[in-house]
Length: 286
Image (cartoon, rainbow, N blue to C red; front, side, top):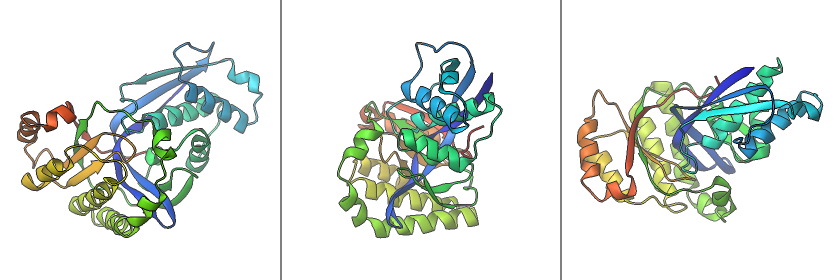
């Protein structure tokens, strides 16, 4: 038996047209999918893509395909599905690493990313370092220094969107039209990590969130930006292919209860009926 867990995300710090293709830097948070792989029969509750990645890992290490039929997958996760929180990436990345561990093998991050992308577009939460990642072709472009310490007030919408549905849209022209903003956001993100400057990180994320409105608009976006200004928060993350939003803050400096009160006593509460205070964490499968 072997276990692994991978963090979810509060959307992305940035996502858009950077360096000739669409790329992203995920915002990993302290919510996790935990997967256990052991000898045994397939469980009826298994998720299809977790079984698919298990089979690919077995094949990658040269084991007979029949071996996969004798492995069981168990998942423990409270990460909402279809909200842009990298739930599927967390599930399949944790499954891949747990499978490798069960086989007494080691998966490096580049191989893990390549295997996951064969299943679906993949978030960069599977990397230990903040990574600018081509989530469609598994190209790792650059890694950053660790991000400055950060909390987020995660706002969950009732809306769901499958990642593959988002990627079926014709998006290239709109993405390319915001290339300059995303290039600036990427440079700001790198500076924020080098200087451990949360303000710069917030500027980068907000630039990307504003550009994303043309592709997948978030409701009450002007009001959300108003909260950033009113409470002097760092910025805003969004799920560029989902529905969650994150207000970037420090609960020791910002009045979370007052922010929550304002959300719950406004039209924003209908759009984002659930709110959670979460911490940004390092990525990577544990």
